[in-house]
Length: 319
Ligand code: MN
Image 1: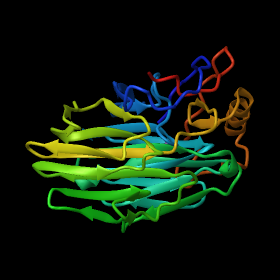
Image 2: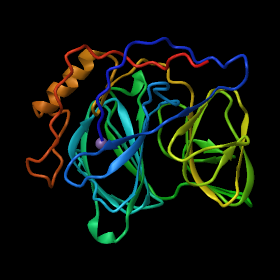
Image 3: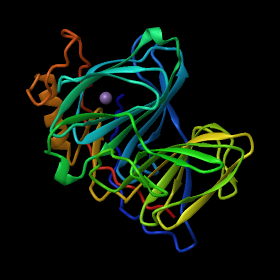
Image 4: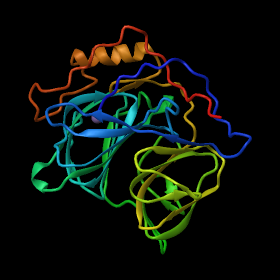
């Protein structure tokens, strides 16, 4: 899952609008994952208008799709990957020696530290279409040179009300706290709403985003179409959600990310030079990115760097 990004420098301004809470609908774009008959994902982060929601910096919604996912060994720096299938199974192998299948109800978390490599291939014999999310979490400065790691979580907490069943992937909702390791205050929830309404308590210091996966949903009375991401700036202490026929949606949140980011391909750094070093090390088989067992010499080569220097992404002013 990769993307070429080179956006002009922009001004940081995340203060709440004096006219009330900030709301933006961010359209998704279709991105092919590459390869023959490969699946196309709907990507909403990073977005031209909003680069990050808290430390969430990448959001791909894939499927439901019978096409295989076949993402050969590739590197990551400066981030954590979060994989959460709704349906289907994905085999994850990494340069730390892990070889793990992730299934619905299970969450894979990989932390790059200075560098890690992994592959992700759907398991063909499950007879199930693949449907799910892959997200990236940008690491703050203090965690950039930390250890690489991989964890799988199979017992995430649930918030249950008469109308809501919500799995807390990351962070805390209504007193239920996930054990998933993060390095900045963060929230990630996969929620099913039965016909009716529900109020969700928010951390007012967080910015949030809502992605409708299926069904119909209103947020504070406004219908939310499928595919675009609804961005909510900091400030609100709760939102009211409602559905007529039922809905599945994802709620993300976090404290606005403090550092400038340069995102390019599968790397996140702080400068153009960081990215050049990451790319050179991957191409030179540097020991920071160990081999991923089981693939022989197969790996995804880094694309050529653009001619221009890569500039840091900042969230532009939202008014
Ligand atoms: Mn990856």
